[in-house]
Image 1 (cartoon, rainbow, N blue to C red):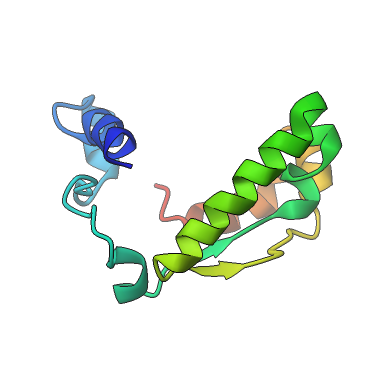
Image 2 (image 1 turned 135 degrees about the vertical axis):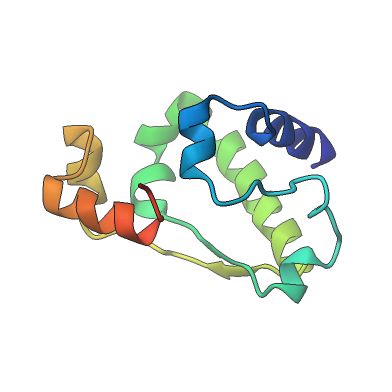
Length: 117
């Protein structure tokens, strides 16, 4: 995980383009968050949208290997205290996936929920 945290830290760390800095209230410390107890201490919930992302059609011909690896990863996250919500399917995910973007009314909601300015 430290390699992923290092990459995310490099992407998210200043100096960033001014528009990006204007959108962020603060910068998350990915490296500082590395901890074996982070998931359990923060009661992190991880949703698994299986209906759209975990199908043989979505994963391609290597779906069995990918699925096995994915399930082992979920086991590791559980063992570290993560709360796995499985499935956490999104009712209209297939429509959004096929269309490429949600309709305007859903975009407004998502922007508000995810604090997009």
